[in-house]
Structure formats: C-alpha cells, structure tokens
Amino acid sequence: MAKRSTSASPKNQRVHVISRKDGWAVKKEGNTKASKLFGQKEAAVEGARKLSKGHDVIVHKKDGSIQRWERSPKDS
Amino acid sequence: MGEVSQGLMNSSYPDFSRNVFINCPFDPEYVPLLRPLLFTVLFLNHNPRIALERFDSGEARINKICELIKCSRYSIHDISRIRSKKRGEYYRLNMPLELGIDIGCRLGNEGILQSKTCLILEKEKYRYQKALSDLSNSDIKSHNDDPETIVFQVRNWFTELGLTNAPSATRIWERFNEFMADFRETRERDGFKDRDLEFMPVPEYINFIREWIAGNPSHTI
Image (cartoon, rainbow over all chains, first blue to last red; front, side, top):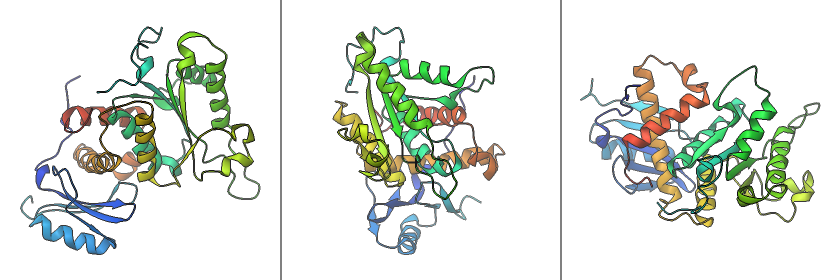
C-alpha cells in the first residue's frame, strides 16, 4: 500500500487550545512546552489568537477532539 | 527505547512482549476514553490487541478473546462500566469475564504466560470492591472518566513496569491533541464527514495512529 501523508501543513504555525487537569493550555505546534496556562477556556482561546499571529487556532474539547478550527485567512 | 520485557521474545507469539490486550466497552460513550488509550499504547511503542481489530461473523468471539489474551504479555482492563446506570438496565459482565480469563491464563499456565501483567482501570478507586471483592487486595488505577487521566495512568503503569525514556503524560496528551487535529483535517480532505469519523472502525483508527506516529517521530520512543 502506498504510504499516505497524514500530515497537514503548515503545522508548525498552528496553535492549539488543549484541556489540562488544572485549566486550559495554549500550545504552538512543534514547541515542547505549552506557552501559557489559563483557568478559563475562553481566556485561553483569546491567548491563542494573540499567539497565532493570524495562523490557525485549533480549539479542542476535553476529550481531545476538535471543537472549533479557526482557519487562517492566509490559508484560504 | 527501554525494554520492559527483555528476554521474553521466545514466545510462540512473536510480538508477545509488545502486545497489550485491551478489554473495555465498545459503545459510543466510551470512545472519548478509548481514543487516548489506544494512542498512548501505540505512542509507547506497544501493540494494542482488541476484539474489534477484526470482524468475522463466523468466528466465535470468546475464542478470539482467548487468543488475544494468550498472545499479549500486557492487558488493560477497564471495568468502569460494569455498573448499570438506571433501573432495569443490566450491568455489564463482559469486562469482568475477560479479566478473569486473563488472570486464569497467567495462573493456570507455566512458562512465558506467567509473565503476563495487567492494569485494571476503574472510574473511582474503591468502587469495584463492592462488585468484585475478590480483587480487594489488588492495585487498580482510577481515571474518573477523564481522557487526560487515562493517558496519565497508562503511561505511568508502563514506566512502573520498567519502561524507560517514556515522554511525560502531559507530552503524550498534547501529542494526542495534535494527532486529533491531523486526523480530522486529513480525513475531511478525503471526504469523511463527522459521522464517518465518530464511528470509524477501530482497525482503521489504529492504522491511522501508526502512520501518524511514523510520520511525526519527534518525542516518540
């Protein structure tokens, strides 16, 4: 079977909002550590938008699935 | 990677030392836990073996389960759904049955099967003792129905068994979230809709995780 690419790009610019036991983490893909932790999800989403500088922001549910994908206007 | 099971490669099952039998519910409510559970096992370079990995209406399910148990050094039994939720609902006996077969396989055999090791997961730490008091002296771990906690418990169990160089549970959880984004994006590009993704067959999901890990090797072991 031909190997299929399972990676979308540009991944290294995407910013994720990820559930944590003690709140919500904002993490840029490719970084080893989260940039910042927030107590409230909406505050984390705002923080992610600032960090993304216009690139994709991916907001996850508590189970890791995707709640909302804010596409970068640069990609459209 | 650090070897949990050096010297155990002579089994009649060549992947015995990396196989992990997964005994859990297969209903939609459990999917939020099953996904990170499978991801963590694969991320830690082991093979999840699960009754749903192949579908053959002509194969007796119990025979398949016994075969999966025998070919797996490790087992993860999630008994968090054995309790009925409402009046008149049956409680679930499949998980305790398969746990019993697994323990019997270890105790009733000689040689390599005596090296079998299992992790029992429950929602709350001591709740199981009311229904399975024979396990009262066993160590179990609780996940509180929380997907991040199941990653934490499974990862720590592997390291307690001797796995070295495992990334932190936080790192695995973050990678799982990144995987879910790629999973969604790639599959949507291939024409998959929400319903297709929600009810994707387990073997297809496992293969996708494998391909993703191979294509994104950073921090895997």
